[in-house]
Length: 317
Image (cartoon, rainbow, N blue to C red; front, side):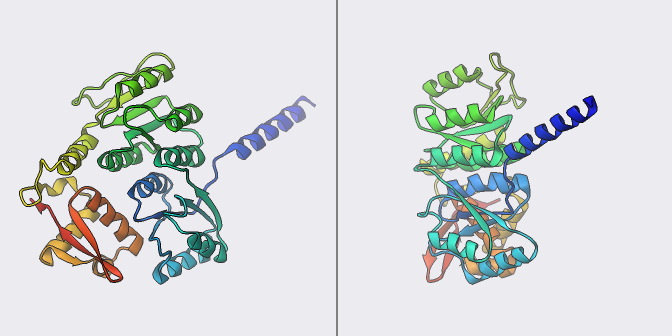
């Protein structure tokens, strides 16, 4: 009798935990013209090992429709869209449903809210969160890269204060480790201190620093992310000039280096559509890599008919 009771209790607990689990998705769709949404999506797709599909405001191209149809044949059925209809048009959602995908859209009225909703919805709980100032475009990409290393979500804080959405997300996620990329205001640090304690980490100090309170951790100015952050910040401030700047190959990922080398061999300028065939990468992957290189000020991109003209704006060494 006692064994039966224990079995019933165990079954009920297992059912409850299953009902509370975060839904798993087969693929993520994000606007390729909205780098913040794209980087937020990338942190999740990298953790789950699922495709990230980039779309423009015009919706899916035929090659992407074919790719999505092929995924359906492989059993893919759950899709999540990150961003509002301005970033990912309603036609995309309708197309996915027409292909028999179940679709969930995650968005909010601003990037701070969207980041928080993505974290809460897709992670449910996370011991680690990465925080970057959402007003600084140059801080978001390195934040996403660090988040990928930790398998954690990215939260964005406003300039001068910790956003309310980020604060709520930290509490709901049950985060005990906070990684700060770049810098945050004194007010934001005080708020983080009230959530568990903040300790400024020296630039050369890479290990996580334990703090008091609720056993929170804060890592400030992560060396790897800071290097990229400084490069992009200086570029934006015109401290590094276009023709005078050089960037070493060793800060590029292998796929990024391949794209840069191909463009360099074409005289420093080429059509984006040619990269699909020359690299063998899928169109969404090429779009993502180009977006990252443009974000870092390595490439420029301008519209030309149905494609983009890409041009190297930093010399490589």
